[in-house]
Image (cartoon, rainbow, N blue to C red; front, side):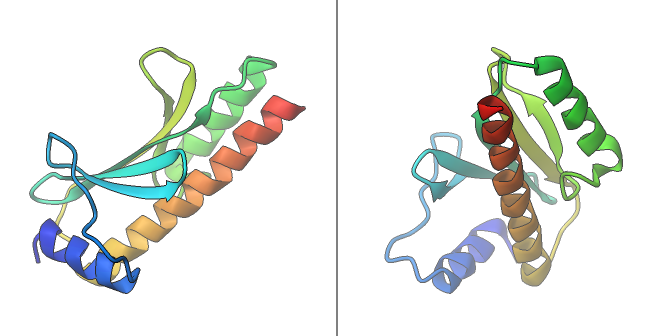
Length: 131
């Protein structure tokens, strides 16, 4: 099953009225919240998930970055994805490459795990920023 077919099925499952939009590069853009967009890219074979999670806290940055590195260790704190920073170093990012073909059920599971990791790390960044 191609990525476009899986996205069509995903759209129907979510009961969305319109198609999930694509950017100029052909990457699907799934809005998770008003200001959070998950990009789904076709690796052929496989998929890549990317998202800018939250602003990177500026206070106690070293402690936050240490927490990020520990979460990345074996992927246990990220559901198998990888935390990082954007090019400017001011935003927390999450990305994951699945470099093999997956069936729809596994595709949906990967997206659900990824969205859960985004939610968790967004909360962590906001909590850390407030502390």
